[in-house]
Amino acid sequence: GRTAVVIPAAGRGVRLGPGAPKALRALNGTPMLIHAVRAMAASRAVSLVVVVAPPDGAPEVKNLLDAHALPERTDYLVVPGGDTRQESVRLGLEALPENIGTVLVHDAARPLVPVDTVDAVIAAVFDGAPAVVPALPLADTVKEVEPREKGEPEPVVATPERARLRAVQTPQGFDRGTLVRAHETVAVSGEGATDDAGMVERLGAPVVVVPGHEEAFKVTRPLDLLLAEAVLARRRA
Ligand code: C5P
Image (cartoon, rainbow, N blue to C red; front, side, top):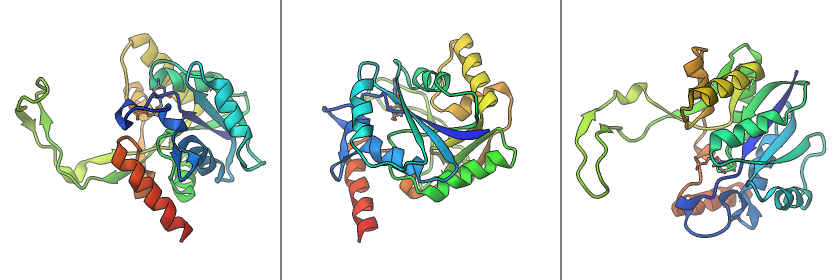
């Protein structure tokens, strides 16, 4: 089968501050989503990119893709998204044609992931892993706490051994059947999940990690916009 990427881009991006939906904010004059689409289409293995737009924003996103130069060997589809990331991904999966056997899910909010990372994820799925996530070791020590109201000190419950922890990124890669089953199962259970691989773990299917990349960081807060523009400036230099 061929390889497709689903890009959930339906989030509001509240943590970035007021403005357009996050995926449509500009980095060096080009919307974050366009950077993300180019990062995926840069891989020669990718034959289709499905962008999941804000529920009322599919025509606008379609126009945006048409207005930017994108590789011609790749097809592009835009579908309206849902209320949660999980639902947006499911709607993207439903739009895939028959001939797709491998699916990547990539956050529009990670516009600068290098093509080598994309290719490494795809290669691991081709080698037989049903689910693959790029990830990096942590710089910070992480504590589990007992959550309290905002501003109240939170009791520490545990300190997991840092060397065994990884911060996961996207694109996450999957055998199509495995990812579809994971979404069906989680939808029935009513549980939420913050990443797609986590849903596959609940199925009991193996998930493996490959090295991520610093430049695959998620643009979440205002400081991340500055960092992203600095990375782009360095690439141009
Ligand atoms: O909010 P967060 O940073 O986790 O969002 C990750 C990705 O999921 C973003 O690309 C965002 O646009 C997308 N998303 C979505 N549909 C939602 C919420 C988030 O496609 N309802």
